[in-house]
Image (tube, rainbow, N blue to C red):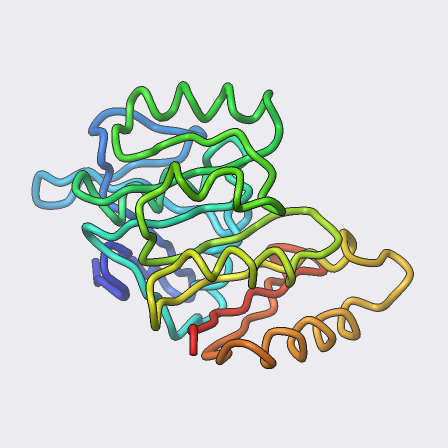
Length: 221
């Protein structure tokens, strides 16, 4: 296997490409993903159909700006599929502040955090960072995947919590912003909003893995 980003590994079989992260909790899976062992190390397969970040990497993402020991603020954690792979990447000395507003999702995340000590679950609304900023260490990186209308504004507001010259990833769900507009128009509107405040260093449409989604990688000015 080849390490393509810090903590992210790739195995190719013909034209097929498979992503893996080193399992932080050996012998445990999170969403029934496959595992393999190489040189006495266990790796978990990262499914691009179930993770937008894995989809973006599969689509050729060029920027990946967090790694071992980093602190990540993750907005829209859901039950923790992608969170678990971020947990693998930052390893035991890193931290993943995983936030979601749905109590049912948070219950699942709490169970995951009991096995993975670097995950800190936070039940809160990402649109109101003043309610939870005191609970997090100054993050090195922001990852946002929420289904709110004002996704760009929420992202920019939370990016203020990230250290200077830090990075963030925004996953845009077009249908959550405006179901009446074509996704490409919404993506362009979001791009213009972002570029007023941050530098976009990469972007990837996530089809065919995720319909009507785009991922932006941004750097704080």
